Amino acid sequence: MTGTAALVVATGIFIATYIAIMTEKVNRAVIALLGAAIMIFAGIQSQADAFKGIDLNTIFLLVGMMVIVAITQKSGVFQFLAIWSAKKVGGRPWPILVVLAVVTAVLSALLDNVTTVLLVAPVTMLIADALKVSAYPFLFAQIFACNIGGTATLVGDPPNILIGSAAGLSFMDFVIHLAPVTVVIFLATLLPLYLIWGRKMKVAEEDRERIMEFREGDAISDRVLLWKSMAVLAGVIAGFTMAHSLHLEPAIIALTGAVVLLWWSGKDFHHTFGEVEWVTIFFFVGLFMLVHGLEKAGLLNILAGQLADLTRGNLFLAGMVIMWGSAVFSALVDNIPFVATMIPIIKGMGPSFGGDEAIRPLWWALALGACLGGNGSIIGASANLIVAGFAERAGQPIRFLPFMLLAFPLMLFSIAIASLYWWLRYA
Amino acid sequence: MKARDIMTSSVVVLDRNQMVRDALKVVAAHRLHDLPVVDDAGRVVGMLSTFDLLRQALPSYIVSGDLKDVSFAPDLSTTYQRLEEMGEKPVSDVMTTDFERVSPETSVLEAATLLFRRGHRAHNAAVVDGDGRILGVIGIWDILKQMDSLREIPYGGAAK
Image (cartoon, rainbow over all chains, first blue to last red; front, side, top):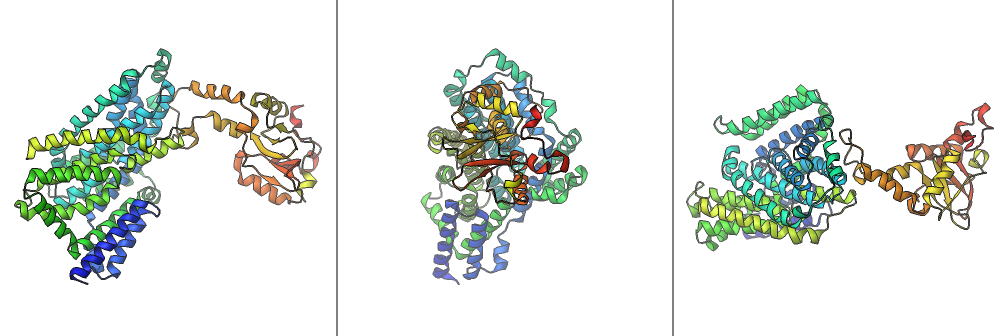
């Protein structure tokens, strides 16, 4: 199928798939793969074409990092860091909120967001319990910290992995272009949280003492594994920073780290691979095929042309439209399919702006908008949903509207800072 | 063999309106893990199990399995606070309504299987008539004591 018919059919399949993903009635990986298959059955693209759309660098980078995290977390290092930092600030509630947010942000920047909150949130709840304060402000701050920290690096958040891989941006590119502004945004976000919660947090001296009774060393369940994981992780991060000059892609570095750690730690192969989030992996596979079909049908080129026309070749305008559009969109729907769709559109805008180098700032606009936008609602990012699910089980549910009432304006605030930074640096 | 053949019919029951504190005195006197709770008409409406009480005393994020290892944490005063609060509640607030009930005609094999499937969460199943009225209990002990020399040991008798 070619021409207008293909365009209409491909768009129809894509929109139907998108809606099905949003309703969350059926597993999102199943829907994405089904949509991709229908695209092939309908004759929009051949199987070979669809497979060409799968970005294996993204897939294997994700798998590699997931294996590393699956092994590393068994050492108890996440819990150790949380308790150690809480004690370092003397068990006072607001400083604890800040250091736990810092720990969350740093871990999310280097590792998987979901694993980070999954392991830090329960310890947070225990600390809040010991202090006899509400855990809500702590969890709220961690959601923000997790998504802001994830924005800082290539491996921090799935949208960045997608963007970095598609646009050929290195780990250091992300560190140089995004990390500085995420630090500013992180600090700026703490200010309103201090005014709302921080200045009112009071705890009794004896409860503060109780935090000091925590024995962070006991959280480390396997010291040997801890050192092995830290060594491999350090090696992988060093590899990422040097990858570009060595003409290596990040996927091979993550995969190498993963197999080295698997072998060295002696962990069971089947069990460890069982902990890889295959739903996410196959969701990516399905999306890649789906978006490739849409690209092949010509729709994304048309959209790229329209976006270029709309912004009249004005880089500032294009950057702002992309950043704010991505932010609002990512707050309400999954940012992964959104970014996967936006990538070919932005690539298609290259010619109108004068080549790949010229549209580089647009990638940063997309990354900032999509990653930070995830903070806008409780369903904005997977880490938010994980924290919400945990809070629900812990009997302190996070409600959609009350969360959004504070989170959405706070997210817009972060996008405003990001816009200012982007304007000063690139436009 | 059927449940009616081995069940304990002289069964200690709790009233749904009793305070947990008082109910636990009964539990302590008879050294039982769980006791049937009945309404005014003698119908079984729940089971008060020590496992459930422990579950309710612990922070919910530990019960949910989110926090598996607490070796690094000091004792939490909130646990004792919850225990105190629990003591003042009526039994009907903390009893479990998800318990095993069998008819007197149920085979011992089936009763034993039901209890085994529950793991350590339940030691006794209620034996009820067609209207749900208590006839007796069949517990793990009732099954174990089918060993010859143990048959005469009464229900909850270890306390004596």
